[in-house]
Amino acid sequence: MRNRISNILIFLGIILVLGAGGLTAYNIWDGIRAAKASSEIVEKLNIGEELIEALDFEPDGSSEMPVYTVDGYNYIGILEIPSLELTLPVMDRWDYTRLKISPCVYCGSYKTNDLVICAHNYARHFSPVKWIDIGADVYLITVERKVYHYQVTNRETVQPDSVEHMIQNTNNTKDGSVTSEWDLTLFTCNTGGQTRCAVRCSRVRKEE
Image 1 (cartoon, rainbow, N blue to C red):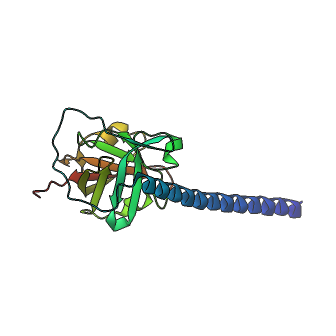
Image 2 (image 1 turned 180 degrees about the vertical axis):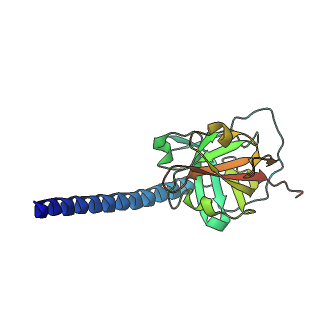
Image 3 (image 1 turned 90 degrees about the vertical axis):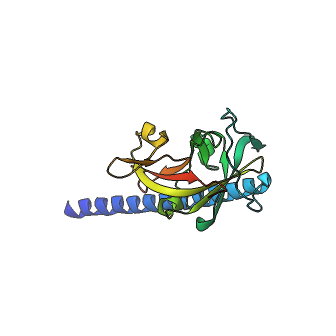
């Protein structure tokens, strides 16, 4: 009886190991696929060949962002993070199908300085932003070839059901005090998927 139980446990252990290996292999493949898809879209958008001087922000009373359509999806532009060697297209809205292709607008607009962009935790999507340095430069190049320059001011860990906290236009410290407003947030899942990492960024004007 003992031998039979031992064999069953060994068999179950092998199944679990194979299952974990299969899941890891799928995740690696899916990340490579997503990186390739994003790279191809960046080439088709053809707006990020070189960074030009960031524009001063002049509110025009509208939050609507112009888009360019590639393969049936609308994009607002390209996100560049030089320190992480990331160049990624950004879709105009999000759902789980779109997130498998590129980062997406979660809410807000670059015109109203409250843009929130989400992406999967892929190695060549937003996984690296969890370790981005405070002060790192972030650029959004719109489909109109206008460049918005930001710098990272804070990183926060946010609970998945804290939607209001994620999108509120404030930059919070660990003790809950408000330090400044932010103009751009990048967010993705932390490892394990139990919490979210929110990277807060502030606009850099030319006079700065």
